[in-house]
Amino acid sequence: MTDDISSSGEKRPALIPATPPGIQRAAELLRAGRLVAFPTETVYGLGGDATDDRAVAAIFAAKGRPQFNPLIAHLPDLATAQRWAIFDDRAYELAQQFWPGPLTMVLPRPANSALSLLVSAGLDSVAIRVPGHPLAQALLKAAGTPIAAPSANRSGAVSPTTPHHVLESLGERVDGIVTGGKCQVGLESTVIDLTGPEPVILRPGAVLPEEMERLIGKIRVSAGDPTAPKAPGQLESHYAPSASVRLNAPSAEADEAFLTFGPDRFVFGGSTRLNLSLQSDLNEAAANLFSHLRQLDQSGAPRIAVMPIPDEGLGVAINDRLRRAAAPRP
Ligand code: TXA
Ligand code: MG
Image 1: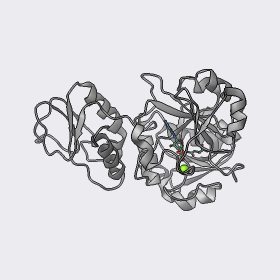
Image 2: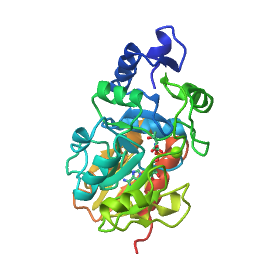
Image 3: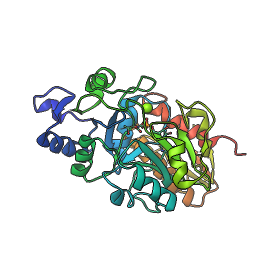
Image 4: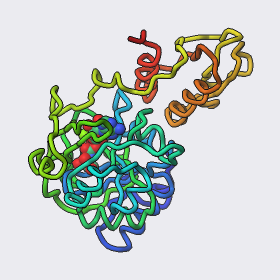
């Protein structure tokens, strides 16, 4: 990340007051691709522009997550949310009843969505939430773009409910923190998956299954660790290319599509090529990963060869995702 904030004489992160000018400032940072932590009624979120691949990659880097878990896209109201996900009757009913509030719905992504594929971690679905906190509302309206926001803590740490927690956990990894006091709910939103015929609760939260069942009928509560839904082992459903994937390839065969990394002028082979980052920048590589994989898959090549990616920083999450793509298919 660049250092415009510190070069303007301020310390990172900027502690942004919860005032109208503060909200404008936070919105500008977000629109410029920066990361801003902000309060919601559940926990503080680590926000970035959900249409900006680089900003979303920066969220994963700041959290130090070893995997690309899909993130929630936050929007100010139902009407705006309907531009970013496909709502059926059930989703519409739940939104009418529980938004704004601590409910997240996993819904199909529209084709050609401008939302970063990294937000969905390559899935064809997207998690959408309209938070009720007035500062979150004001910020989302001012930003005018969907904001991806996981809880504003380092991976594995507890979720933050005060600006102080955010500062302790993320420190200089975040560009700004909207200082809005303590979160009311203190527990992450309920996540309900509405992509299939049967609604499934992926993560329990303040909105209870029985409240929702009154509106949409029987809901299944997903088994497994409720604190880590869709955690590492549960990601099998992730988009896998239809081409087979060969890792750590120093060169490619003539019939292979080639996903390269770093300077590749003197690297041999490949029917089609895409470079994740000529400058060997892992943040840029993460930002390009899912869209490049899709494009190479669509080239029609039966196999995709992938150059070695350093296993450090965001490279750990990139390699995790590539290993899943290369794993034997059922
Ligand atoms: O209360 C909250 O939801 C907070 C505030 C900041 O809004 N955010 C939050 O985000 O808890 P995060 O990233 O920590 O949790 C998102 C959850 C994860 O369990 C993730 O697996 C699930 O939502 N999720 C997101 N997108 C999904 C998708 N497309 N399919 C299935 N699960 C998804
Ligand atoms: Mg979390």
